[in-house]
Length: 192
Image 1 (cartoon, rainbow, N blue to C red):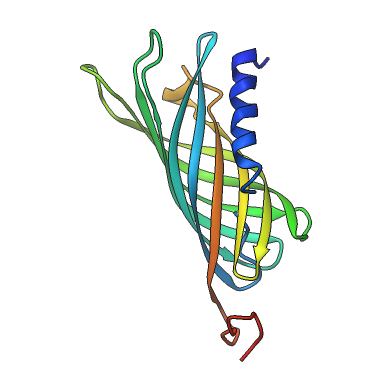
Image 2 (image 1 turned 90 degrees about the vertical axis):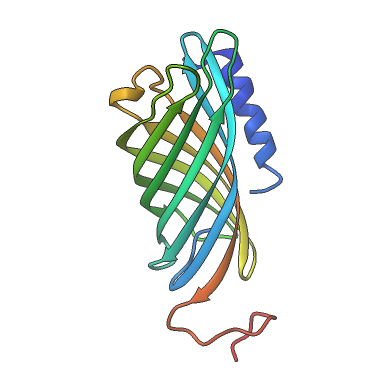
């Protein structure tokens, strides 16, 4: 069950994301997306929040399926009675657009490699492989760019068992920089 503090963090993060709702790359498009990350990790009865950022490269297999590869980093500063730590992860995955509209809901699954580095005198980095799932909304604001908000649920198994419910919110802007197998488009979006 989510505590009141965790609910406040999630609501605040979603409110930050509403004005800037990553668009997927559609059929044959290559796109890059980047934006801030907000992470929440449980520590006993408390939640430790952190901020960071991420970037991804996407390729549209068709209008519904997009392959992506990227990296993210979130810094969790010390909280009362806690040790500061950082979480960095790279992910390779696929996302499925539930419906292709101007605002498109989607689900996604990724294989991810995590690196967690606690700070302080007992610092020591360790890494894990795991799976993550996400839900999100894309808004294709313009022909070659868009905005998105995505909530990722990280299944950090093994060494992350002391923080089993790690969740991040990623708000991103994206830009389509190439269309594979298609003639270049003029700035107004028309073919040449």
